Image (cartoon, rainbow, N blue to C red; front, side, top):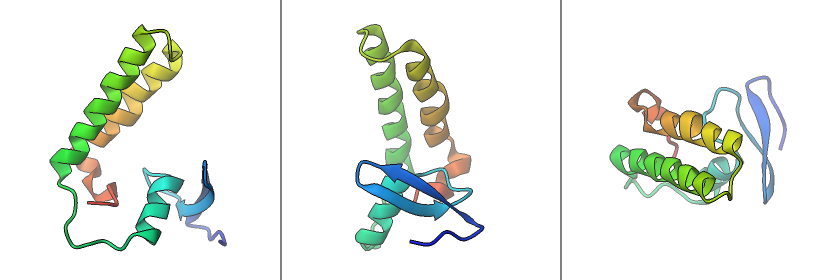
Length: 96
């Protein structure tokens, strides 16, 4: 796993992965792309957008229940999930 100038290292529960420096995804998505051949049946973009909405609502609900700090919940709801819902980022949804 070597770095090149156009990559960065990301870490998840399974360890480190090298991903493109400008990617909007991390280690888990890169691992899935490498380990599971694309079937030719991509996930529809609408499905990916809905996952972003589910993640946003989950963050808000967990904040309201006191299970997630307000600052973290806001970051998830406003930044991460809104980016997933933006059609301008469809090309970065690697499993689509």
